[in-house]
Length: 149
Image (cartoon, rainbow, N blue to C red; front, top):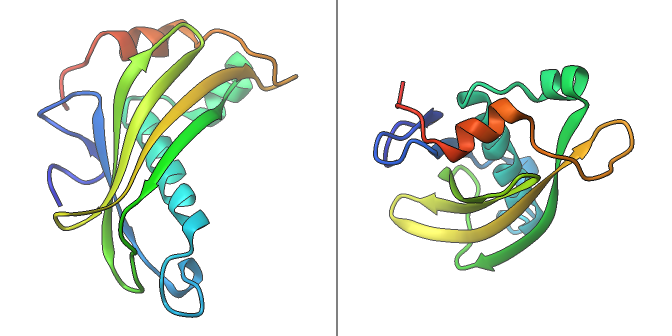
């Protein structure tokens, strides 16, 4: 796995890697990862990316009435993952707007790219799911790369 798993990478301060092991529950009857499970792997990596940037989603929901939803996703399935595979799920910021941001995500096994995705995330109020601005502190972090820790 390239970089530091579960940490912001040094080559790009807004990129992130998260390790995933494939378990029986992730696979179909043939031992191949079920296509929808890749979405769960990417969701976990996005959540951990936000945590690594210093933003707790529970606190954003409770204090700021903000949650994030997937607005759009473009997926390219290239090769299957199988039971017991050790995967790397990456997150990289492509674009940031006032109420949304776009990420590139990739799932790899070693040097093999299994899935690539472009994901647009929108900020909404937790109380009514209406679009709203990203909180200023997160927006500032996304717009000005931080130093790796």
